[in-house]
Image (cartoon, rainbow over all chains, first blue to last red; front, side, top):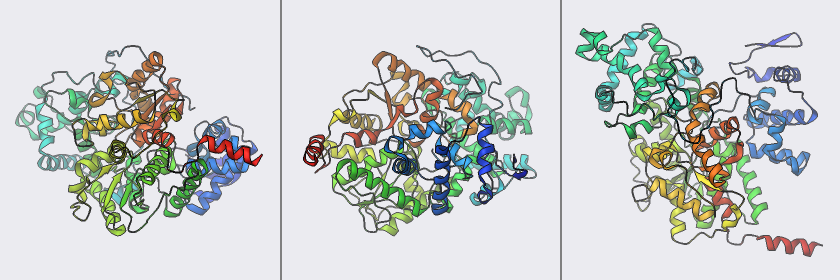
Length: 110
Length: 511
């Protein structure tokens, strides 16, 4: 199912993940979050940015621990936990935040 | 939490056997695999020309290869014993989710082509041709079986629906009709080394982070080594243990136990996966290829022992098939079981009095234990019958003060599947997963009401992820499921560990 972003069309898979991670632009996250009735705040963007940087380096989304630790360091210890992340992304940081960030869906027993 | 676009079953005080409602789940079907996920596994990319004959030929091949399959397809006398035993039937009311209903989907085609009566008088013996409609039914309903084998416990002939589901999936793969979830994942094991696709550097980064966390927490430098040649023990664990919660808390626990035991151990980036989805799709060849990675890693690293982490079906493959798939293991130390379960390892130390626990560290929880299907019904632990039930419970009881078992009809060999096993742990089957979890969640809920139970421990990555996702549909919290070695991790007192009093003193000195 393709999505329209600023007049451009992007291919996505059956589950709504971007087919080509290289094509990502911030508008992709805007369009996807609007479909979920979610308004992206600076806190959301901080997570999305971290996910993309981590993926760039390691070719995989960060493990939950790695993510919560990084968030805790950057935004305060009280935010370094998955409760905070699920508060931001109710469908789960790995699945919802990764999708907005243009990353592939984590597979396996997760 | 995700919103449900289906009715979540209501939990009752007593388990009820619901009336049948034909067709309630005929819309449920997982995403089809794409050619790019099929080919690395040796399967055709899409539905092949002449698939009808090819499917029948494949069924014939499997009947010759597995005597059990022919016996299972012949033996059923329609006694009805299995009809109310499947969690998917109890949660969905669809009669094709009765084990006998599911078996009959394959049995009717078997009868048509492989029995004399079915060839001559098909209508009299319930024999049918393999039409597109039947094939679609196969795809739908053989992906509504988690291969948990609960029905086989109650079948007077011991018919194992799991093997029938595996055979059906293998036939479908052989004609190009694979399931995306399983087949994409097996491809990642071949390419990267694990189900998640975590490359070595990401593993290393994750493990370094864990070492920091544990040292911050305890003051003890517990190591989580990767690719360390010459280590005594190779730990093979599901990649979810690196990635997800509460799995990672279990991995932290394994490391603490190894540390306290004073053994040298290592993980392998090449065999960074215990799971073996080759079993779910019934493919011996793929199961063998996945297992061979463990053999290669063990040889390359020169280890003497292999220990498996908390993963249900991995333990079935390891305990029951590893020697055939990847043996002989004559290069390992014969004084230890090959392979060994992490629970066996911890339990041995426990019995020798080598581990110290402060049970009060788990006093914020009242616990119960979920027997995972593949551990309960397809393997053992320790050297006594029933060890697979008793050993995890003994570990839990050693690490906490509050433990209750769920209704005996729902535990041990009669345990209910979590609802996400057998390659069904995928978002496109969420309705099935939620409904299939009902019997287990019902038993848990009763204990919550009666005994104030707050948490359920498990030793399977699939169970843990499944409950994390489905408990919220039933009004519970995602973090009410925990790893058994998470309890170990919380309660274990490491040699030289900082106690809370030490920390108070440090604060006082600093002030």
